[in-house]
View (cartoon, rainbow, N blue to C red):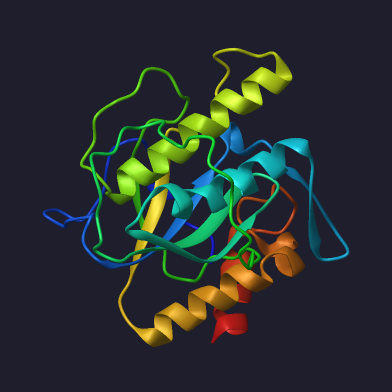
Length: 221
């Protein structure tokens, strides 16, 4: 389900003392700057990516190619955000630098579709707009997300001829997937999200937040 607006602020609310580089599965949501719909559109319940959206999709897939300790599960690029499951296997390689997604070819993996489960997850600070590489804990979720955001921002701004213009919001949202039941529920949320776009809290339509919450609660059980 979509995240409650009162948590959409800039301070980090990551779990205190939690090691985000340790093995486990994480549900990640990354939103565009000011929730602008720039990646494509939903038509007939399906996401249709534009040129920019295809860059986002390709770079997300590339994440598992350039990091030995990362596997990807269901994910989707929506008009103004990305949802995905990142699995850290514990096979960490060498130091990681933010913005390090390089030119390796992306792999052919099954691409899910988007949706977020009723539980909110937590918001974490991470570089949003590209710029000089920053050192973060190697192979951590923060480093992975920062690298993805940085390389996507650079490519999009080259295409749009808009150097320095932000593409992403400053933070991202993460949820630690703690058991198989939660994993299956989140997969379903991701896979079916385009068909339920009207109820997505990132969609600026006339459906109230309370009605959206009620829908997801009933839909996902």
